[in-house]
Image (cartoon, rainbow, N blue to C red):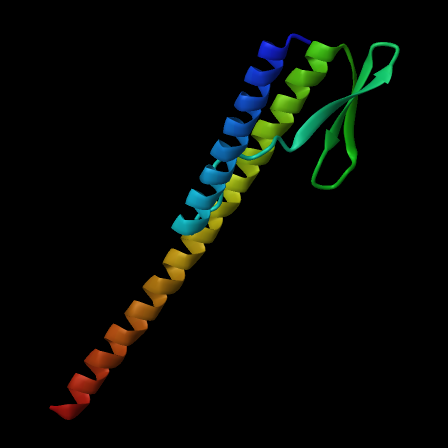
Length: 120
């Protein structure tokens, strides 16, 4: 490889590493998780134009599909379905938390009115 190209690649790799470290440090100082997440589903070749869609969280194969493009589309569909399920779970948790707070505030107000009625 040409020494000039090798030098420029080494410099760019160093800058890329520094940018990654700076981003991680920023997220750590802010106390939030990193915004960039790796995809949950990956496409793995099986040979003979067959590809498997593997769930990286569980390590199980979700589907075996003919054609790379079809497998990539299926992986994207699985990803969007998983994201929608996660959003629905968040929504249910939000509604449950809201109802709990509403019940608590109502109980406190009812106790306050009962106390005011007894003291008169």
